[in-house]
Image (cartoon, chains in turn cyan, purple):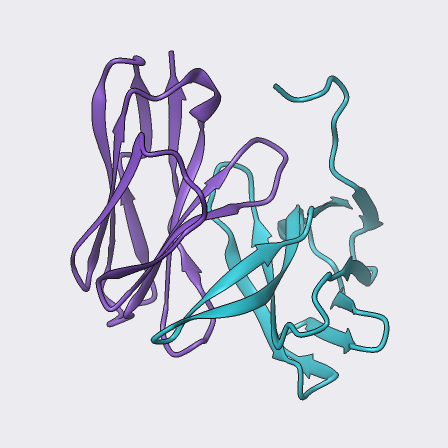
Length: 116
Length: 111
């Protein structure tokens, strides 16, 4: 069973502020990274991805930064809204398993709470 | 259509029951995945199918038996589960080493 008091790291931000969620990954050979958002009772939802030949990628209100030197990934959310409240997971491709499939390993997750 | 569907949404079963979880996608993806997620934890990979063939089994106990009847369907057959197997079971699909799309999951409770 789970330990009493086990909890996810939490980030609380004011509505309208920018959010930065950080992730340290483990495998220096990982070449593909994805950020997922998971709301309560739902499956993970794709936000943005980045390959190791890039160090920055932007989407709508989101930016992912990749620092391969220190094996660090971050997700920036601009003008955070209440609908952004969720758990955010980074995931790394730790190896291809053939024919277009691959193995994703997920980070521990960060719970983002937006204060209206 | 970028949707992965899973049935049932919820399942309660006893330790002697046999049940199956179903997953379907119509995006033409040739890779499909089963993950297990415990509360407040990240998803953990269980099985990977490529072109309807099992390519990865992450040391999952034999009481979980995956099946890929065709390129759109993925099943997970459950038999003689333990209470600690209670979790959210997620299915995902992908194409050409690109992003994995997840279904909403089946929340399983083993009594």
